[in-house]
Amino acid sequence: MKIENQAENCCLIVGEGVTINGKIVAPGPVRVLGNVKGELSASDICVAPGGRVEGRMLGRNLDLSGHVSEAVSASGHLRIRTGATVRADILYQTLEIEGGANIEGSLKCQDQPRPQPQGDVTGFAAAAAPHLNLAD
Figure 1 (cartoon, rainbow, N blue to C red):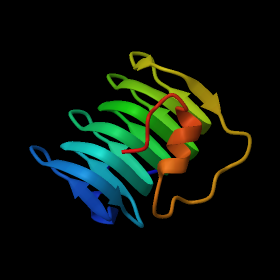
Figure 2 (figure 1 turned 180 degrees about the vertical axis):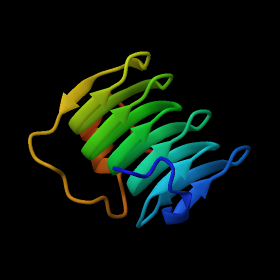
Figure 3 (figure 1 turned 180 degrees about the horizontal axis):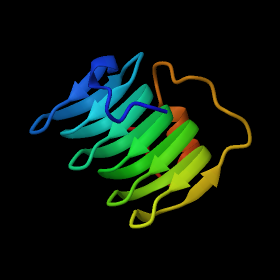
Figure 4 (figure 1 turned 135 degrees about the vertical axis):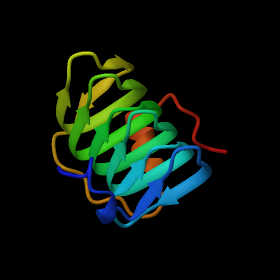
């Protein structure tokens, strides 16, 4: 996974100082430097230092250095880097946690890779965090 420094390959970049509220479905990589509140679904997601995602996140490969909360699902590789704060129920295929990362929540390994996210991500969140109320 090489998305952390390749902004030119991103489908969407949420820049510093930008806040997006709602549902984001991107066909390619997403890099978050600002704030996302809601649902984020993309092929690969990088939450940079200072970036924040509050809501449900679904992707193939996730690279987390910022703040993430609620529910996270990585059908491929999940990397949680030094300085990241993750307060979420987490589903992953493979997991890498660097020293100095802060994690609070549940971790569950998926037996088989899940299909690439398409459209509504409500189903993954129900599996990742059955106690969350998704009917709004």
